[in-house]
Image (cartoon, rainbow, N blue to C red; front, side):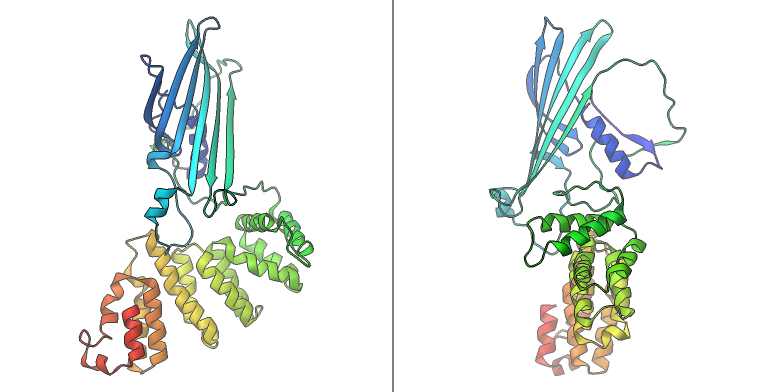
Amino acid sequence: GVVGKVFAPAGISTTVLNVFRGVLNIFQLNIKKTQNVYELQEPGTQGVCKTHYLISEDTKAERIMVTKSKDLNECQERIVKDIGLAYTERCTECEARGKALKGASAFHYTIKQTDNGPILLEANGTEIIQFSPINIMNGAAQMESKQLLTFLEIEKTTFKPLQAEYLHRGYLQYQFGAELLQTPIQLLRITNVEAQIVEILNHLVTFNVPKVHEDTPLKFIELIQLLRAASSQNIKSLWTQFKNRADHRHWILKVVPAIGTPAALRFVKEKFLADELTIVEAAEALLASVYMVTADLEAISLLKDLTNNQKIKAYPVLREIVMLGYGTMVAKYCAENPTCPAELVAPMHARVVDALSKQDIEGLILALKVLGNAGHSASMKPIMKLLPGFGSATAADLSLRVHIEAVLA
């Protein structure tokens, strides 16, 4: 039948509820008694998408066959989330030529008519998702999922529902929760996270001398996924175990930023301040973390602390990475949260004022670059004060470099 509202206790996580939605999705049936072939926009876990129905009847076997196919490319409300570089621009012309994410699903049902009403004997479904960000012929990844439910018997045992307040938790459509970041092209069964991390790390070290092994990309993705599932203590233990082995150390520092959580940034910060990373290692890890770590208030706070750290300030390359990275992280956060507060760029406004009072031209230019990276509307006034004709009389006395950076910001 038709699945409407979904109710669940508050203690059930969004991720677990999505699993239930996946099971309920196969039972979503809009059967019309007066038509055998028809189309409609039907709600499902993937959104409200174009669905084609074909109904046939085998009178001798007393069976009704229902085939349902769903075009996941034609949806009124498609459930999809783009993740990656927040400052990339959407290419409408490219999407018109072909979409990077395509999919379709098909379901087949066998129904038996009885005196007590119809019984669903079998329901099976197959869904294929294709992701081709670069090249459809040679650069596409496909994921196929299947469901098969078979009727066994009718049990008269009654099940008591959980004694709790059931709240309206949406509908059949998938909801994004705070679940573990997943890499769609390489799903992984995790049994013993610590042992699996060490096993893959050893594999990467062993089989990439003198040239890269063919399975290295997938192994690297597996290592990323395992580290995402690991605790901060697991990652610290891994570092302690292998930090004195050059090859292992190399792979750990390459993979940690790709974890994509604030834990990665915190790890780099702690190890640098503890003098366990060289300047080059810290620069590479910080630069990668700025681009790969998901922007949230915790990540922004970590970078803010680093901008004020004296050890970071002592090395111009690290200072510039951290400062510009702070602006980039704010921009990424604001792209996902349009109502992001002006307080996020307030420290840089203060730096502009301080650098101006001290006639610190290099510091002023760096602060302007940070504001340009952040792109927050609250920075317009502080920036315009540095431009001739908009700011104070002293604005005209500033160097041309400052005026150029102010315009760019």
